[in-house]
Image (tube, rainbow, N blue to C red; front, side):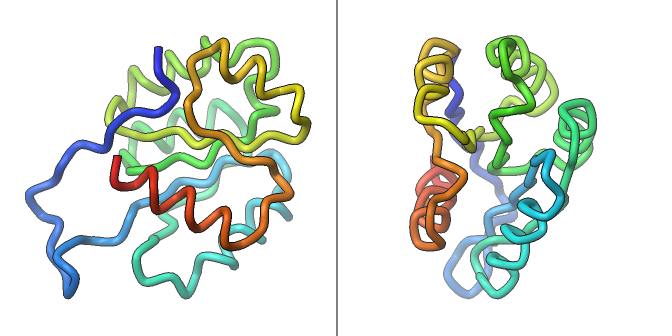
Length: 139
């Protein structure tokens, strides 16, 4: 299973640059961190935050409702069960690309074993976060 899923092309992706903004769902158990990321992105014309979730269950519900292009997922949500969490997310939003946020470098081993191809450290800088979202929004 791949943690990075290609974004399905949409027939309605036209704006001034020929594309609609990347639709991003932020899922983080730390509401301060989630809102900091949301604030960081509020002036980015090519990224639209469509929701913030604070639990894995809420994330799955919101992903099913909103079908985001990219899901910025707190790696702590799936601690010990990342592959199962990705399978559940894939069942409700198969075209969504999952970008995992990790606290510890050691968590990258579990992420890699679960098939995640895209992850960032939670302390990544603004440019790194924006670059990763943009790269994965295009598949």
